[in-house]
Image 1 (cartoon, rainbow, N blue to C red):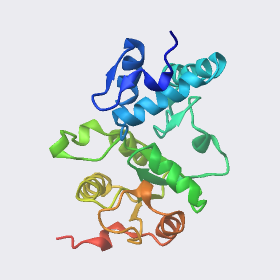
Image 2: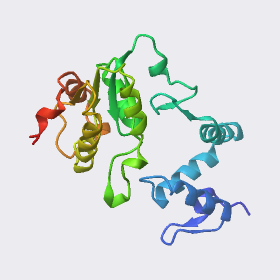
Image 3: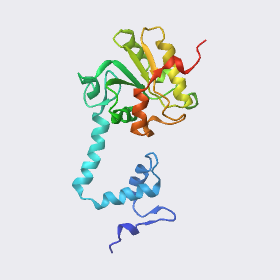
Image 4: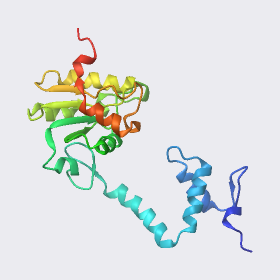
Length: 219
């Protein structure tokens, strides 16, 4: 007897009559913000697609995991040794924007207001989460600055306590070098994540950046 797909589970208890579907739902529900019911909708949607489309869907993620690499210069995601930004001869290599992760690179690129290059830290200092300076790509940033080819570092981290702590740590590490260290203007509300800022506000924050040392009193 044929049982329709939408009848194979009991929604109240989320009990599955198919182990294959249960396993697929469990995998989808591991994604951020995806609960069991949303995961189930994804699985049922894929079951309605033809075999070729589902195979392409799975293959895309397998290739992503196995073939994606990180830029040797800035740690941005890339398909080649250098990402498209670093390899672009029209970008200003002397102007470096320091960001937390690749989502911030995408957010800033969408503003079309920045023509320099990036340095992706891979996180921010957060003692509560066990993340310290040694867990971030700070040493490679210091190494690049020490070569004397960089004129300005723009700190474009989220305006949170963790972001400010990371800003201050990097500023202290770079203070000995003869470069300008600036930070994005506070058009971004305190406590906001950079990736959620609208493009106009974020773009203006980049353009109207200020000297980092002017944001606090140095004794």
